[in-house]
Image (cartoon, rainbow, N blue to C red; front, side):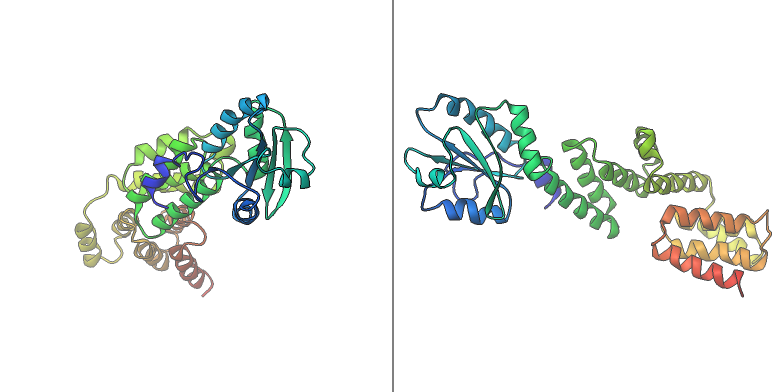
Length: 308
């Protein structure tokens, strides 16, 4: 899946557009393929109807609309019981319209009569989950992969597309804020996090991003890297320069190098400015996350210094 296909949504297909259509007609001979086999890949709704049935005519446009807007989580197969009575008879269907949901080759749920749109939507969500759930999860996984590859701009586009489709997708909001921080859009990230309800604002992922924002704020007024390195070369115990260099390197995503600068301060003077270097290193760990390679590296070095 790519960002363009997700943001454009699933194209509504009409009955009879082939095997890949969301809505199609079936026969007794094709029922096994259209319903039983297909239901092993995704839920299939079978609408048993007849041309003379008034309630069937009321149900048809409503159920087709709901299926078309469910973003491919279900398919709808229609069977005219006047032309093909055998399957309905085997299932004991005596009143139409009747809609039966098939999953893994067997009927699992159903309803009779022309239900309103809201109840049909609830029925589909009961059978297949919220509309677009599978697609959104796939898009989130793809966006997370882009983040891991350092492709933050592309990931941000995909997270934004997810939020356009499902505005309450918490993982996408956090992911977009993370990309904003990585690309220097600190104010945008801050605004996203400030929009969260209180119960979400305390999430560990949100706390990590807030820590990254705090670090970015610290790095905003730092000097040039070359100047700081020159000061350290002239005086290895220029801890102020080392500390500022660590912040600058972290802002450039050079995490292990940033950790090394703080660890060198800690190694040479543990009590410098009330343990400032170690406290800053712990803040790095919080911002990077507990499983980040730089966090693991920094914790190993810190432990060796603490317990040597």
